[in-house]
Image (cartoon, rainbow, N blue to C red; front, side, top):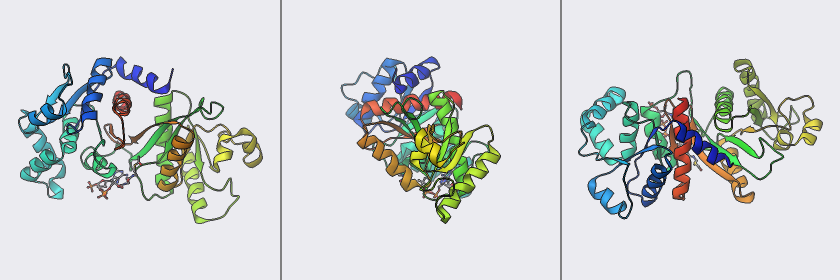
Length: 331
Ligand code: ACO
């Protein structure tokens, strides 16, 4: 079974409520209908009657909940919560209402925060920054987590590598700048994500252009230091580095460059040393190897919120909703 079908089956087993705030986009309606018909999640759409009538024309919305942000009995509760959370940043009842009506992503995050939904998927027509920012501001990180990061679940035909060709790649989406401490945290969150979505034991490679001191540079030291921190803080995780990609994946290269490593040659969770490397790396594998790339899925948030590519198809939205629902089951 393809990994995404396994994830959909998991989502169906304990249905969660996921908000799709982009009612200005027809793909959202197509996805909402599919998700509802397949029983993957309970869907909430946010939109005015006009938006729903215009963009949802021709779609059977039976079983889908529609929330009108101008006429919702729960709205005052969300405004109060917004002010409670962001009053210290200057948010007033007036500005909260204005922001929620202007940007439904805020409305969706407040629904989650007030316990009326379990997760949000957006980004079919908003940038990554604009999708993530309301979640960072309102939902915040899980206890003990400093930083949210973004991973891709990669499904390749290279069955000899990773977990039967399946990998987690991170951080490919969020942190433009990180130190060793943050990199160690990204590694731990990625191991948890791998375990939760793939089910097998994560083997985490901390990637670099150097293997075990073969090159000297501050960039290499940053990764080596992250390995040290991660091994001290999370001794239960199988994690090693710094490793070059070939040493991480290929047992023959691993035997030469990193003999004795419990991860080298068998890595299934790849932690990149920078956002450039992670973002370019996942796109290379997606395009040149025709791999399935599911994400970016955010890890470390207190409740699941996930982003979409603006070039996504309705089926991509369905897949990300299934992943969000599984995250909500584990939240
Ligand atoms: N984890 C947790 N909280 C964070 C993080 C993080 N990684 N980053 C920012 N925050 C918090 C801040 O502490 C702040 O909280 P506060 O308002 O309560 O004080 C809030 O989020 C806003 O932070 P800003 O510093 O103002 O950050 P900004 O809004 O400028 O941007 C963002 C944050 C959107 C994540 C930014 O780092 C970004 O744009 N990252 C790159 C996204 C991107 O373009 N990715 C590549 C494309 S994705 C793809 O190709 C699939």
